[in-house]
Length: 102
View 1 (cartoon, rainbow, N blue to C red):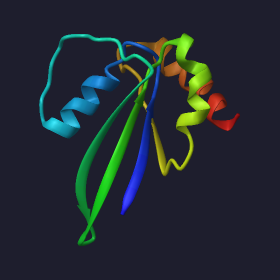
View 2 (cartoon, rainbow, N blue to C red):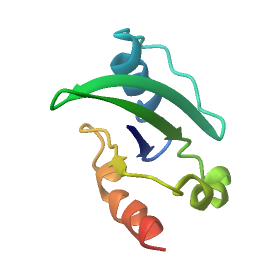
View 3 (tube, rainbow, N blue to C red):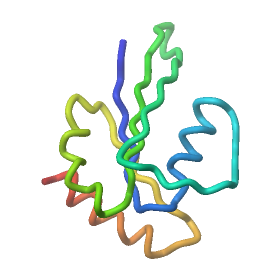
View 4 (cartoon, rainbow, N blue to C red):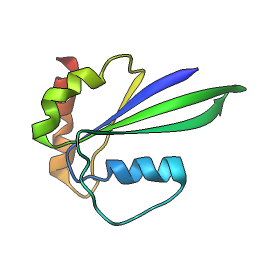
């Protein structure tokens, strides 16, 4: 079974680090900006069945936003990411929800 998950949020929040930590169990404090989208694959077991997670990390940079609708196809879930130390990143979640609704 394949499930496509999309990570969305402002630029510079740590979506790539979150993805790397989940997939490889590694953490790096080094920042790198995602260009367009990064895709990773991870397998988990749910109720005795192996699920293949295809995780898409979309760049939060505004110049890549026109590409977002193409990433929404066949998505089973969207994870909105924000920085708990940045109130503005939390406030931006409404903009991301509006983007998803469009």
